[in-house]
Length: 115
Image (tube, rainbow, N blue to C red; front, side, top):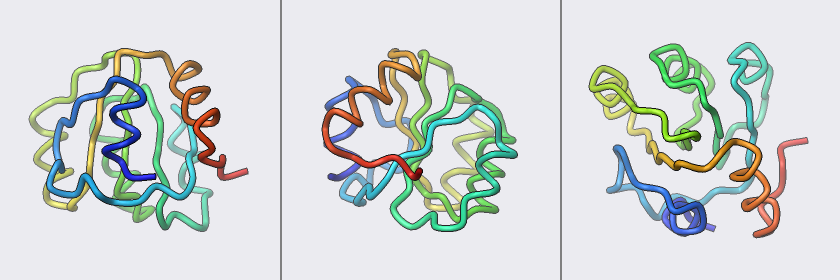
């Protein structure tokens, strides 16, 4: 499933990286703890669901080679975050849904969890 299809499922909006809307999502990990994100070994095609909306989340994705992020709970992505994400060719999508609801929708759509 592409990030564009996922955005539609969760009534999301692209914050940045819309040019990469056809990137494939192979698996999902949901966390607000970036230390947990840093333990993931296989990040190819990984979509990170998080409510942590700050530079730390972008830096964590950068260090982990995660290119797809979905920010939940309607959090506002700052210009500074967008600039750093664009520098790393990342996609950020935003939804008003909770982390629980978003994860449930994606799980129901058949996208596997990382573990």
